[in-house]
Image (tube, rainbow, N blue to C red):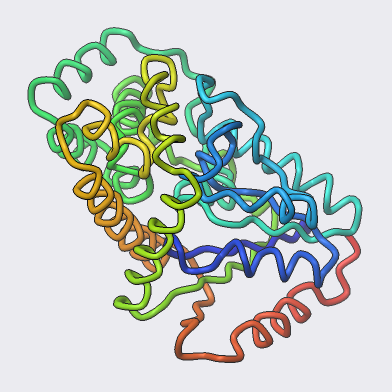
Amino acid sequence: MKKVIAIVGPTAVGKSALGLKLAQKFDSEIISGDSMQIYRHLDIGTAKDSPKELQEVPHHLVNICDPDQRYTVKNFQEKARQIINELNTQKKIPFVVGGTGFYLSSLINNLNLGGEMKANKEIRQRLLKIEEDEGLGRLQEILKVDDPKAFEKIDIENPRRLMRAIEVYQTTGKSIVEQENGNKWADFYLIGLTDNRPKLYERINQRVDKMVKLGLVDEAKYVFDHRDIFIQSKNAIGYKELFPYFEEKASLESCLSEIKKNSRHFAKRQFTYFRNQMDVDWYNISNDNNYQKTIEEKIEKFIGGYHG
């Protein structure tokens, strides 16, 4: 069976740094699970590895789209699975690093994402009207009643995914997260990094401050100037919070505080999802000084006598 290692956890905890070290040690390659690092020219706000780091270890699904292109969970699922198969054929165990819980869940569980079902325009228009009149909360309520399984699995903060899940269920009577088959297609070892909350929040604040020094405001202005066509990328944390500053409706300081706050909330949601929905081997980076050595030993055991 195919083998894959995934490194998960809240934002700013150090997943990318660990992924680089492990991929180098085990002579492997990295698959980014991030929905925004796919975009060219958006480097700082998406927390991409540096050009030097991207060269040190081969990275996949980074810089593969222009910012005005649409990229779906299904795109990720299909591309990542193809890369995993290719690397396993080369006797390499790929490292999937970062990303949202639903992205990883779609890959691990081979979820049927409803990609073959044509859009139901009548339902879609009705849901768009509900979102406009009653807000995101009402869509969440509808999905929770219609399809509680999907409500637990998908990103319910994303209105597009909410509407698609409701549309699939109301059109087909089946959950959007229903598995295509019961066969396990690959063996995944999930490594989770976490930290004590005060320290994690401090890491997040420091990351935002570093991004500002690297040029985050200019990059966000580029997104703001193209917001009519950068439909998905404009909603990334780190960009959208600065729009009021460019519109002269808020100070830069208040907008940066909003980025930090939203990043902290996102980190909490990430950890909750992975903890509740997936079988993760967790390591607290502050409480365990030897966590990397322990992880390496467990990877050795996981790989065993694997021959692709």
